[in-house]
Image (cartoon, rainbow, N blue to C red; front, side):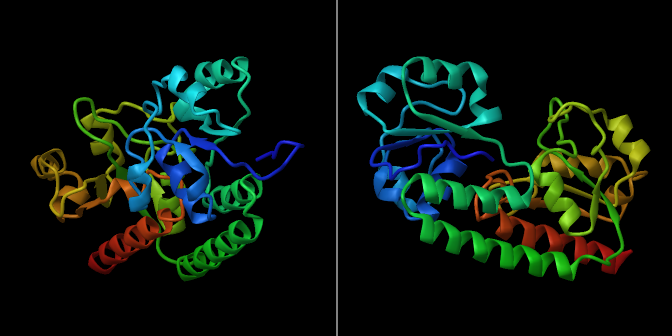
Length: 264
């Protein structure tokens, strides 16, 4: 993750992804944020900041009107076209793409430096790495189990081994059964899940109960996860956002895989 050569404190920052908003608040740059995208809802103060579109569709007029000194973009979420467009408009854009847990710590350091909050950014990064190393040491020698992480239904979709969620699965001693898929977000068939036979199936859910599309796997008892009732959900905000909260999601993931190991 390269930092622009000219680094100075920024007074007017626009965040183009909810996880970027969270990282900026974590390093102490919340008061400098003047614009965010939809679903930037954590921490609570982020809800009061002006919205300038969503991650994929931005309002360039609003962005220019806010006179940002720095725009922080999500490489894959915002896309090259939008990022290049903002640079053509003369905006100072920094984009990055976290793929591992260590990348999240690095984003804390980099955005802390870019926003003029290096000390807090480094402190938060050190805390993140301490928690991460503690988890890694706890799960370095556990029995590996196959995990199917399902994004949703119609069509069935998952994440390959290059996604941060897959890094979380591996951290907890799991093996993403679709790690070798070529697309970052592949569409998969029921038949492929049956063939790969995961020990556990996990999906995102904001509710405290399993979504219906996860419950549907009970109709396929030939899959170990379905037959043994190893169906679980995790709050997507804790798994899909590349922010310090992903460690909270990782701890939940590890607890789920521990429970499954005890039953095997």
